[in-house]
Image (cartoon, rainbow, N blue to C red; front, side, top):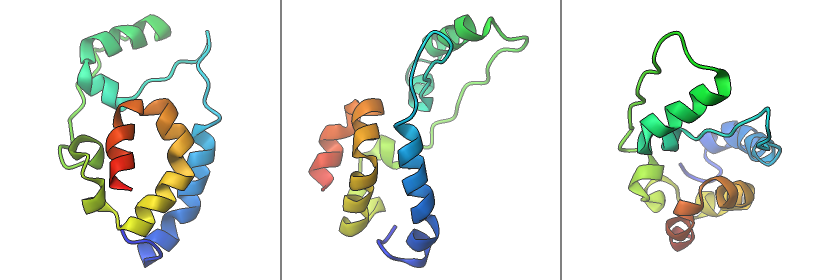
Length: 112
């Protein structure tokens, strides 16, 4: 994605809204945070945690499918975003990335 491209301009307001929303999320006795990445990393443990919270499922959860090209997995952020886009995304999402994806901070900061 290129900064200030038509795609960027169409999505930027959504990115900012999403970044704001992520910072409102809290975990409590009646709310749990589940990351898709955790379901992929340890499906059985994540599914048990989710079942414990919801009280179980009538049908088993389907296993998620890993998109191996996704930047999270490749950690090749500079191949997916130009430098200005990556810097802007860091500005929008740094607090939520630090909170929800601490395992990727090193590779993200290196790409900046």
